[in-house]
Length: 371
Image (cartoon, rainbow, N blue to C red; front, side, top):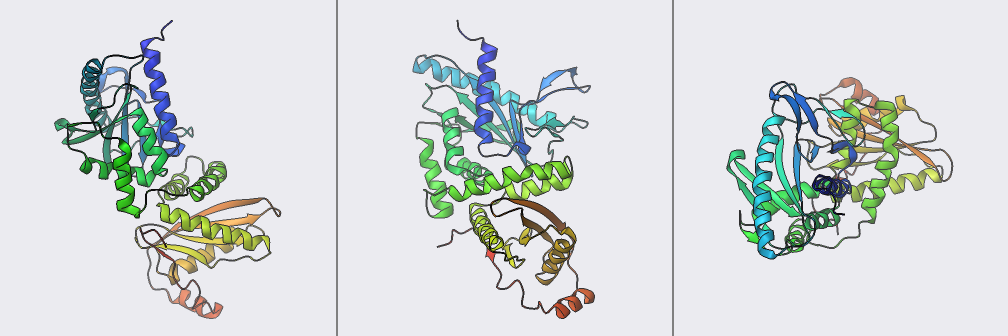
């Protein structure tokens, strides 16, 4: 018995969601996007999109088009053209519906109801789940959106997620990709070629050992639970996860290296608060690493304030590691933001503590891969 057409479509959407979750954390992935609104469709149920990823100011809206079985090449070209036309209409509706005032919050894959970003960067992505398709337009013009849409086969999208690994690289790749492919032209070239050129252009290399990224994701996924328990639904909780999720490959490498040193030191009974990351981009959060034998959030907060003042930093995320025993540890997160201004009281504390030379030299992170 053949599967029902609606079930085939649902299976395609679920598969795309699984691929997206390999890279994008559950906080930013939305799969159930049905809603009812008095000003749209006279109050009937409407689906916003098949899948949405909303991370920071970026909103990626997906329409998944699924075809089961095999067919002639000519038939698939007609199918691709028909599905792209249908997806265009859906993308236009999705964009305009997101702008409607009073739109409800949608539940992400962590179970939190979140209001989607209205004023950010909207990117439409069409996924063709069809094993026969080998030639299709990668970039599609959409005059009604005054821009373009991306088109992938499911296999090509999976390849992108597998090779790019982190959200920041996926978002930057979309920008690179729309300038690499000619608009509305059918392309047979494999997606791997564009991917390789992007990685070479950004990093000077295309093959990486991603073990440090897996370690970073383990830290974040494992210890996110504490964030959920302590700050569920709070703005701070989402901000902390987003800061970490939007790290670059270089920042992740540096983070895991410093965290490893912090942990090894704590195992030897050496507790510290001198290691840190200061990004070259002043708009990003600096990271201060603190290890303690017993959690003392008051002390950690004071140290973080001194660190921020001394380095003239306005945004900082403190990572506080506490050992439970030789093999087990917990991580606590402290997010602080405040405008910097000269403070005679802070100057006096720094002098009294004799920490004029602390937190130097600066570990400044740029977008270049370290030698």
